[in-house]
Amino acid sequence: MYKPSARSGIVDWKQSMPTTGSSPADRKFLAEYEGPILTGKVIDLSTGEPSSKEAVRPLLGFSGGEIRLFGGQLGAAGEVTFFTKHISGTHEIVTVALSPSSSRYRVDIESPYATHPEKELPALRLNPAWQDELVKRSVGLQVLHAYRSDSLVREKAEKPWFQWQPDWSYLLDEYTRFTTMEEVVIEFIPGLRFRKMDGVRRLAVLTEERIGYTIGNSLVLLDGIPIVNHEVIFKYDPLKIRKIDVYKGKYVFGGQIFDGIASFSSYEHNYPGLVVDNSTQFFDYEGTQAQRIFYMPAYRTEAEKRSPVPDFRHTLLWRPDIRTNGESSISIPFTTSDLTGDFTITIEGLTQTGEALYATEQFQVK
Image (cartoon, rainbow, N blue to C red; front, side, top):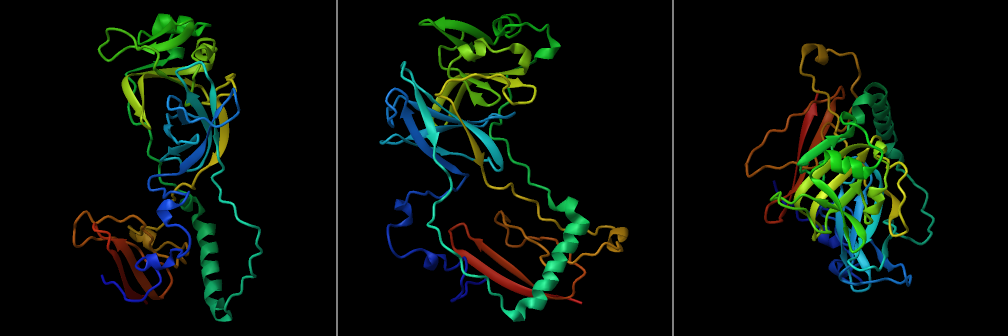
């Protein structure tokens, strides 16, 4: 590999940075190294004004069948920042704000879309010399979609955000069904207890030592939605619940510590009949598109090699995340298509010290 002296690309990325205004580190939009960064405001419901009280703990959850919960970092003017990961696709997000006092708060999420002044883009003008090549590539894409459409939509599986297994899991249809949540907990779930503290009912989780129950700081979820008022779960119809998972021990979400988790899951993960107050906010959120798996036929057998299905791929291989793991030489197999001619291999990367690398090599298919 070599580093060219003049090239517009990864090597001279600094030249593309704006030369006016503040530096990138001082700007409002932070680099999203691990996942989307969601921002918002914590609002005091009694005043309607932003609040920055340190005791308020903002939480952001994703409704559905998995536990995806993120604690927010609260700023001096009531602004809150959630650093998320593994949330590609379209989701319904839920925000709550926990408070040790009787004061109530809500979390408003800001739009993740940038705002730009209305501007009419100039008409696209293509060089006539490109016409033949563009037509060939267009036909190649149409052939690929016509014959291989089922192979083009494969998406890379998203890693689960919460990777711990429950200490106890209860499929309620395997037990006698009761009509109140209190009866379900008393009769079948020794790891949970409803208890009253200062006249307020709270759901407590058995401690790791199994010698008592937590005091007022357990996390309760219904289809991934944080439930601040545990009376909601106490009064919820247990016949709508398929499974209850109990996690003992301490769990940290964005710097916020919880003593145990009680996760309630409905049959369709759509929290049927859930009634919450205005401190719980629901938003539709469109994240980044899921990473697709680049399609490349294998041609391992003779029958596959003699297949009459046309293969007009112009891009033979695309790998955005190759890691050498310290090796000086690695092998990356790929297959050519039915097209003949000259092809270019382009490699861009970074060393462990941050040095940008770039290399090209050509080969010919006859």
